[in-house]
Image 1: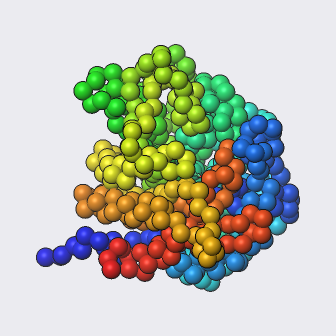
Image 2: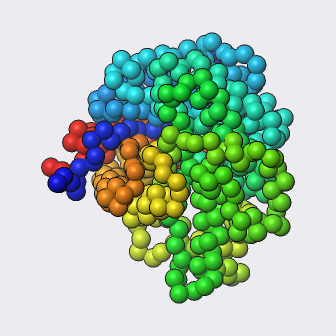
Length: 467
Ligand code: IFM
């Protein structure tokens, strides 16, 4: 009989930390890189807090060796990062840019030399501006451009990179980018958001087919941002329907096509006034549901929702009503007394267990990885120069326990990546939100491992929480 230690993860569990190109690299005009939609958006007055841009960010483009040394110091066995499309294929079509690719070659080599496995995300939101000018993700051709780009990047790095995900959080790219417009490219046209969603998924399917044809051994997947969702009042039918609607738009509208090859009928009915899904062509859903080797899940919080109430004002940012086309009137509730992070997101670790178990129980089996989980807190160095981020330590601890609980309940969870390795450019929030287990002083680019980073090192070493 195997005795399972409740504080220890299964052997071979993958530990890592994650970042994204525009959030950390800087060097936006170097070595042939051309602008992405995030360069344009962040340079447009009023779009990001304080007018912050990713022009310099963490200067990782020049400091990647120092950053890999820090990863080594933390004992990270894996590192998830994204490729900036306009760095390696300026303009989004045509030949590759050797200098841009060389940066990622050097980074991958540096990682491998330090025994850190590279996990590549092909798209973490930096669409080449030229492709947006040609219609962006609502334009079907962008899916074809993405598949071509994905195959080229795999051709260049596939001999050394085994783990690939196509997209990070297509919900954000489509609904924040094209419906509420709080993310680049900042458009506000709900029908386009659905077309964008479909073409992102189509690009995912075509990219998977192309990479798999070239490399049967590669481990391929996609990362979705999933939420636990619950009713403000479980006894109110209207609140339960709000759960169904928001679960449909946040979770099922991505999980169902990717894992089952269909869009949820109830969501199609909910949004019938916005789109007729006419962008779906014969064969698309078969492509989109190309089998995965892994599903990446980014989990941060829970949505607690209630039936419409015309007297309650809209909430800001990603809860903006326009991010939820067809369900703009659903209310997002903040529960009194539930702690929130600096993003104002409720801390809800049981929601992580719920999400993992739900995917495992309701969908065909696929190995799961938490590709992001973490918390922003307004931490600054203490008088001793150290960063004592006790809240983040507690956040991670609770979520590690939530992972263990999910594994115990049968979820095939195989790994966990903390968001984020470094404090970085938090999109519309600029540098005002700090998610790193390593602090960054943006004036000097000095890095400081936070208490959460030191704690993470222990967890990785022990493969769990014991001791
Ligand atoms: O910083 C982001 C990341 O780019 C995508 N997932 C959520 C993180 C925190 O908002």
